[in-house]
Length: 358
Ligand code: ATP
Ligand code: MG
Image (cartoon, rainbow, N blue to C red):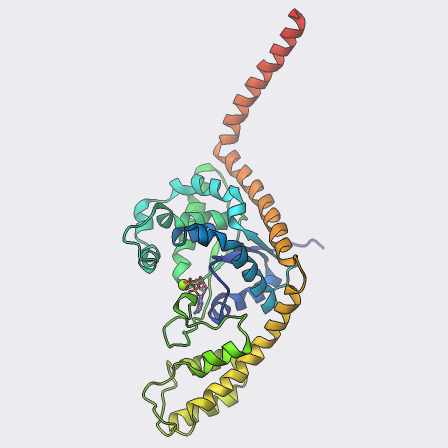
């Protein structure tokens, strides 16, 4: 029986800090499923950080943030034997590929992307740096380097995968079939912040980290934003758009219990405190095994560094193979080889001539 090689996934995170419940809902839970079905490459995309966080301090923090991100993955149940974690900046072939791909997309096309404008304004940049405009091209290099088939992304990044497909198509047409055209897998689900803002986000201070301890989680949950019109427990409350219930829906497996709470909330027969206390129980049940696994892996000194090291070497090997095919397809290998061979031939002749005359 022949076994087909598994299809590949490329996805990852910028190493800007520890991961939170929003990341779990938006991306990590999908990765748990993917690790059994695909060959998974999880990139720690530190070069992408340079667009908005280029200071030396930011770069210095990459090491610890990368370790924490790997731990976050292991803690939720990612099996280190099944996936490859790697550090983008340590795979120099990605930089080379980005340059070789950069002529396959126009400035106008990149300028039209709402994501670039959004990122610029989020980072308070009134002018767009070259690397921010080129962000999707670097992403294309990330994706095409391991020749990934599937790219799990948030809705806002779907357009970047479309650009990658276009680049792959243009490359294949121009130089020969090297890249599969990757599909986007648009991950469902956004988690609101504890403060009721549209998105849980670490820089907004409205996040519950996967690594937070019980005391911190309790503080966050008990001070969560709920229906602001409800100044006492006997006032009928709004369940829709209420973050406490959004969290119940995601993290409380007791669906009948949630329905009961919602009904009483709407009727003004339950206080916010009870709703929050029940949420706290659900979150603790969710986070406890995550904390245990984290402690288990953290206790193995050097393990995470080793995973990152071995994974990066593995990714480099893939990258070398891809880049070599790319250069061959484009004809660069031939150009260089002709020059090299000509010089080697002359040098050899020269040495022989030296011998004969000397
Ligand atoms: P920052 O505050 O630095 O922007 P963040 O906490 O918002 O950090 P990002 O690094 O911006 O996290 O998020 C990376 C990806 O994680 C997003 O593209 C999205 O796929 C997922 N993600 C982040 N926050 C959430 C959320 N609240 N709900 C669902 N998915 C999320
Ligand atoms: Mg963000």
